[in-house]
Image (cartoon, rainbow, N blue to C red; front, side):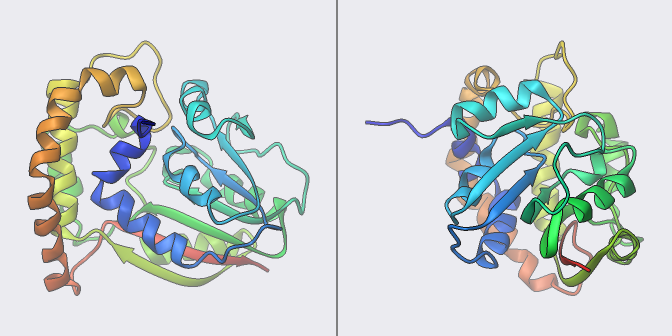
Length: 264
């Protein structure tokens, strides 16, 4: 019997990943003619599901280590990036999805200009980033607990939705829709999981990754953390139920921002 790849096993037990996947996939029509780019593929876990919507997909990341792990899952069309410039011809893609990538870049504005450049006229960009604001106190708690930005690979905590939408407008992309999810309960659960992994389970890496080191980033690390992941699988239903409490505080600040934009 075929074993589920380790990346997909992590997705199965990630509340936030499943939330954003559900929202993004629900807005993508099945389209075999689509030419699409996933910008910041990490280990390929989201790209695996994006491909199921059809079309020709390219998956790009700065880190060779990420791409080697992604290759085991995605097999083909993997590109290594360097900085914010994108090595593609203008008007190449109908769709660019950037899941949790901008906050890792020094020059985020240049990257958005590049996204606008490589999109065809009327092409769509879907940008996913952490959401910030005065009510989002968990960022301060994260620092107090010793979870430094470099553990996440972040150059900034994220973006307020107005800040990101203004940046999109300035770079040739017109925002059409936004959704803010992952409120206090979901985000707190993820914070404690990150804390446990970083301080008790992870080992120092020889190579720093763009997206930090807050979870297993390779098959080898997944195997090393298997006893803890087995325990977490047992308690995951309780975590999931606790995350549903976010529905009771839908008026409160959320910690994950998704913006759908169109090339002007």
